[in-house]
Length: 404
Image (cartoon, rainbow, N blue to C red; front, side):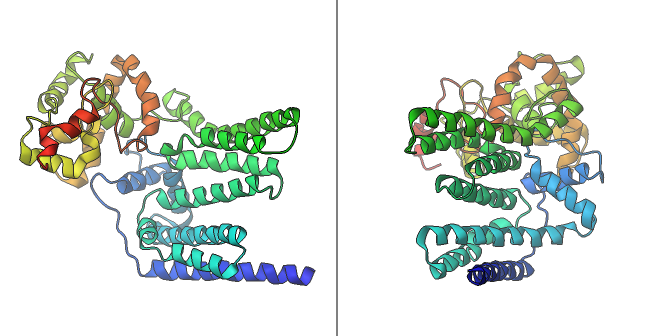
């Protein structure tokens, strides 16, 4: 019996090694550079250097999930700032190989066919979309690996594989890491609690035992989730004075382009020294009315920033679009050359302006603390649509119906 178990272990290790070998070989043919401009890659890169102590001039981007840049920072500390990018790329393809192996395990346990399960894992490993995702310096590779582990633990839980308490405990820990890796997964604890409830209901035990299971498993899960992201909340409390998952005071991201500029209007309170900046942004950003918008500009607007062209329930344009429309004037105001490499410098110059708006209009930011959790959940960075300018009105407008 021991002999056959040993054969099984060796076979699984051989399959894992084959996935790892294929993943590393693929990574040797992939070359990626840190993208400049408004992608997430330079933000993650700059934050990682900031967390690693290499630089101290980068804005702490409030809505940026911290786990991936923290992982990069650890890598920088381990292999050095001059070597971390190629090592990171190889590691991300190791992540892809591990994801393929997890999918192999799930496929085998579902179909009980090792050949079919192995081919399933290979198809994931060779999928062009997955290769593309893992060849980018973004949080998706780490997030996909954590999500795969979450799926495996959930499968073990619902199929009574191993101890349910341990499965629930590790589900909570992985869920907490997933939230720190991708803030738009903030609903995972709610969804998992529902799955736990369904699993309790479908057991054949009596009502009292079902209630016992639910009120035992759910708190264990939620406490383990809290145990993970509590560390980041404590860090924000120490650095910015707020015990919160989403930092709203560090500048950048949720404060600069989404929260601050979303609420900005003529009635917004602001210190006199920033009045000119406020006027620039308000004057450039006239209300976006698709029916009367210049069609050429509108076509470009919708093709490049389609999700951003939507409105939301309380405010007008998104803060990000207000920033984009005013960006050229802001470069001129500060005397900075309008090139993508100067974008972090412009953001740094604007930080006191953003903080001033925040400090003088704190009550306006309370709903945005919650909305910032859904930064990429709803079709992109939708923060807020004007109550009377709905998505339906936009889609039914002559502007859109005309083919623009």
